[in-house]
Length: 177
Length: 120
Image 1: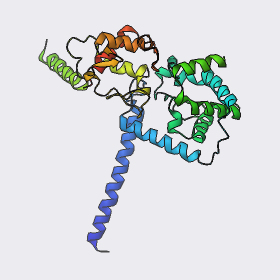
Image 2: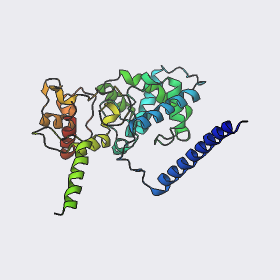
Image 3: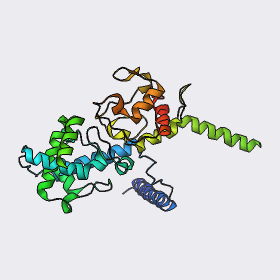
Image 4: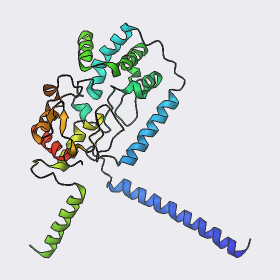
C-alpha cells in the first residue's frame, strides 16, 4: 500500500471514530442532563411522531399477517361487542357523539378515534392490537382481561362503527346495559 | 431599567412573537394557551390542526384555513362567540353532529378560538 492510500484510510477511520465518540457524548449529555422535556404538554416534533406512527403500522401489519378472522357478521356478536366497547373502550377512544373521558382526552399520544378504525385496519389487525396492546402508547393488552371471543366481538362491533350515527350508537349502548 | 434588562425583555418579546402569531384584532383569548388546550381536549384526535402534531385523520374536517371560514356549521356564522359556543356545546347547535361536548371551560374555549382564528 502506498503511504498516500494509507493516509486516506487512516483519516476516514479517525473521522468515523471521532463521529461515533461525539454522538455518544451528545446522547449521554442529553440523557443525563434531563434537558429533554418528558411532559405531556410538550408535543413530539411532527416528523418524529410520523416515523413512530408508521413504525407502529408496519409492526401491526407484520405481526397480524397470519390471523384469519372468524365470521364477524352475527348480530349477537356485534351486540356483545357494543356492550364491551361501551364498558371498556369509550373512556379513551370515544364513540359517535360521545367524548372520551378525561383520561382519554389527556393522553399523549392521543388515543385514536375508532369510528373509522375499520377503514384503516383489517379485522385481524384490530384483533391483534386489542389483544396485545401498543407499547408506550397507553393501549393495554386485553388478552388477560377479555376472553378471545370477546376480543373478536369488539372487532365485529368496530367493523360496524363507521356506519353508526350518534343516535344508532346511543341506542346500541343503551340496549347493552 | 438597565440596558441589560431592556435587551432581555426585547429578546423575550421577539422570541414569543416568532413562536405564535397574535390573535386577530377584536378577538379575546391567548392563542398560545389555546394551542395547548386543543391538545388537552383531544381535538387533534379527530381534526387535523395546523401547528399541532398528530395523525392524518379525517373523522372531523381539517381546521386548516379556519380563519377564512364564514360558516361554522349549518347556517351559524363564524364569530368568536359562536365558535366558543360550538366548541363547548356542539350538540345544542346541531343535535345530529357526531362531535361530542368535551367539557371545555369558557376560558379554554376562548383561548382555542383565539388560536383557530390565527389559521389562515
